[in-house]
Image 1 (cartoon, one colour):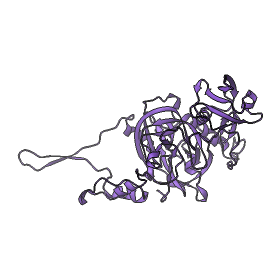
Image 2: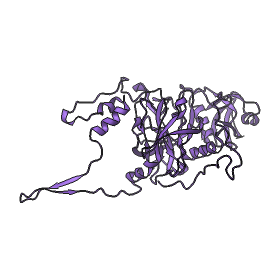
Image 3: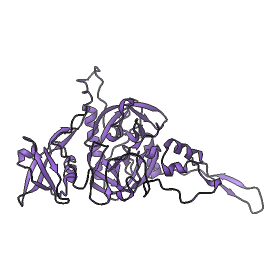
Image 4: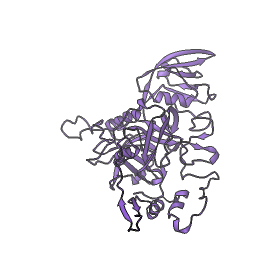
Length: 443
């Protein structure tokens, strides 16, 4: 699964959420009972998390021609591995400066300048009527009509003020405001390698500020930033459980560094098990799939429903292996459901870290499509307490088929610590079902 952060060639420049989260009181302020814990430091990946080496290659979600791997850098390439050339050279008078930059995608700063210099900014629309008697032409200005709030234009107008561009020393991405005092959600892989230079956030009103990383969750590829500004406009959060295939959706973000970009499409699938994230960190997501055009740089931006509410956090795209890697938008984008993102963000804001559920077992490479094989169980962990053993092959969770290790991980990550699930497994040719109460781990 290709993540959607854009490698950095240069530093780029709704309705209220009704208080879904209130900033904790500052240390020492009236009513404050304790201080937020320090930001957790990354540690070794736990041995009992369910991260396998998928049976058909690292970080794949299926053995077919879709290659779902973390982005290695660069921009969309053509079939030969090189940028596709324009089909024909337009006449000199109509050639638009900056178009080749768009095709080659080699310089985002030059591209943005080229688009403006080419006269692609909105212009007044006029109509000319010539009188039949040879009178001088009469020019009438045509005023733009109002757009309905539920139209794409209406949704975009309300949402753009709450979507931000994020830049680090290694790349760019997107994010969106969730509180009026400066909390922002984005992807972990957008800011994971920010380094000493930190994280820069550009707002739609033209301001660029430095952001504090409140906390991250590599397990869900989520992060929360704080720009400590007041009077901001947060996006309203929807309910991803209500999303169904065919629902219209709108994606907003900064693909290829082009901030304030709006695309639209539909929900093309739900509960799609995919892996995402940056190099060295793999996240397992029960994703919303969409055909809305999203590209590198859209990472962390919102996926909106027709009411302008966030239903997902855009995180990754698929690429065709036959084209030698990432090829830009091909109508297969994936978003983290907002219900999961909301819960994780609340934990990060309150505790500086987030938890995810585990069964206390490691999974190995098994036969594709035939379940998830348990390699080992952690002594005293949930799997061990239930009687699961190495060699057991899990074939379903809560009645839903499990075709591989990644599907089992995603299904578990869609639950919460303390939930009880039914695991059906095969041991020595005999099928059995047990109840497992999920444990937890920070990450």
